[in-house]
Image (cartoon, rainbow, N blue to C red; front, side, top):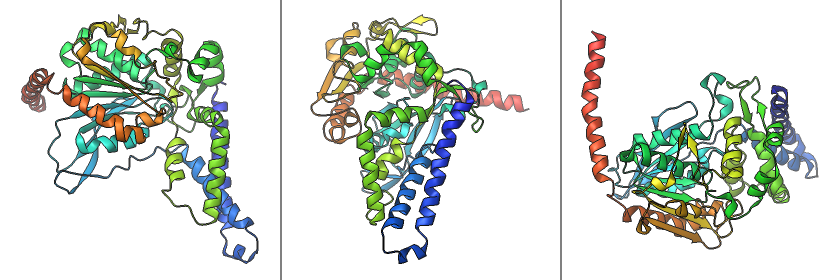
Length: 439
């Protein structure tokens, strides 16, 4: 399947279904059809509308949609998205709240690179923004990255996180959600050994597979059952001619989506048939519950083949993080070297992707960290999505995470002040060099 023709075939099918939906919606909406005493044309138009929207969303990056936030002064403050670090495979962005005094809490959200865009954490960002300065990793779709940009595997991902943490300073509080949790832990350990003054203040790991063998799920069973050769043959393709990344080896987003949908096929089928009937009856709206969920769920992105394959092999099959044997750029990372970063783990009892036990395993690896700097929480009744974006997150987990950050506030204040002073001193010198070069 590692050929452009297969990739382009999937895109052709998607494009054709989008066109069929648009055609059905147009034909079923002709005024003359209202004279037919049968609901056929209303249902046809409704089917077309839902189908066109669904297949269109598969290649459209969702908007953040966070326009303003209410400040302590009771006024709405405009939110602007600003890039702090730009890199080929992902940017570090900030949600800058204009006209609001800078918040003392500074949080870096590490978004998953697991088939969906960082906008999957939209509600997480929105819930934290009133109380903190928020930064997030905004990963790029691999199909839009030229082959000339090179490779991107889990070691490159880890080094991106290292650079982002260095840029933000040692008073940043890092929150890693799901897939990036083990790599964020490794990035923190990498800094602890090689650049201690750049370590974050706190690290919160939410539903991440630190030790996949600690509790079995369908995800871990799949990782054990399938060989790397089988995975490469069945999952990896080359980006087609339509995109900038033509020729790049990827795990296609459309292929991932097919897997997502098949896991709960009956549930998704029912959801779409119900939505078609709601549209036919005039009961649906642009931002109803169905559209809000599926606009995000259907928006998928390609992952580089090397990132996907190295994740399966090194994190799930070989358990390199769990065995404290992860190598980054030729350096074997020692998680036990973390001694000055407070670490908290969060799990949900009904998490069927990262079962309880997988994430809390991080605390056992932190052999150099004192007990007073370790914390954990298991949310009763919460599933995977709920521990970072649902009711459980809003009502219970979010307050606990903020309290954890506040309890460890100021731990790295001295290092942060020194780093900012060095940056401030370096700016005039850099400006003088630029001026001299221009003369």
